[in-house]
Image (cartoon, rainbow, N blue to C red; front, side, top):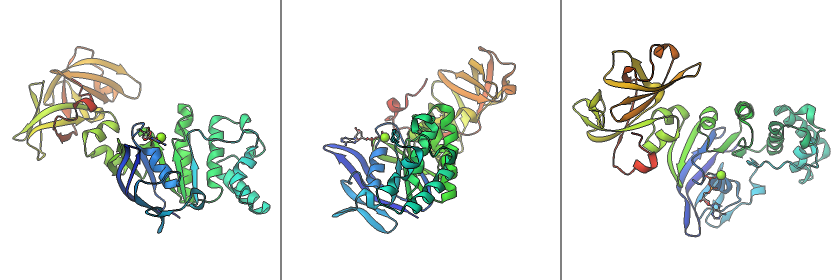
Length: 357
Ligand SMILES: Nc1ncnc2c1ncn2[C@@H]1O[C@H](COP(=O)(O)OP(=O)(O)O)[C@@H](O)[C@H]1O
Ligand SMILES: [Mg+2]
């Protein structure tokens, strides 16, 4: 059982402030993902929770116990936390059983108790029949499960996982996602998961905390962060999106560079930035407020993936293949937005977001 409270935590390395005013509470049993581009501060946050780094300011609590902040500092080995890193180090000379038993062996736990605990946790990660094998006799995914078992063997209240799947191939990564999620649910354990992979974050998390350059952009459940991003960075980071500049006036939104407009019921006026996801665009031979030309069309079996040019703006459209059977590059087509995200356009985001025209 462990809730994590992070209270106004900042972290600097010398002059370099890598985390700014991080405040959040992770519920007991919650699966929270720290998501963001490489270098945004995810690992640093995780290492502060674990106790491998001290915050420059702010406090961290595990349940109601303060573990960092002010004069207080509880070292990692006293925090009852399990951890798995990207470069999961399993000891090559020890068999699976001994690898997993290690955290209990160094605590000099009774032999009988060690055996019971290891057997239990090997069952959880589906490795019972491999107890006697050396890591070199296991696949990458199995080795990763050994690292997971070792992190779980001492029954931590909190499990910290730092990009644990990034060394695995794509197929294995996908199946391990579900395995880790299953383990978390069945043990009721709190997990803080670090990744730069938005699909992984979407699939596993109760809540995603998206960080950019040390600042939390949004903390919300996957569906909310995907459908209601608070700013263009969030919209761009999670899922596919195209941006266009626009001008909101009298119930319509005129898209710059197109001479065309779409209906707009929202409250903004004047210059805006519009973001549209490819699966939220409807195609039709003759219906819809925007007229465009098919630039490219790829049949991918389950869906078709198109680019449609409207004036000087290009929109990606992902739709069922039967919706575009008669289309070819060069075909005229109408578009309507089933949904769009509208942000203030202060002009500051152009470079970061590579506005695609
Ligand atoms: N021990 C350290 N000393 C100096 N700078 C560090 C140290 N650890 C991390 N950093 C810097 O902090 C920033 C965030 O790093 P990190 O937390 O590892 O990012 P992420 O895990 O999101 O990729 C980076 O600019 C990194 O260079
Ligand atoms: Mg990292």
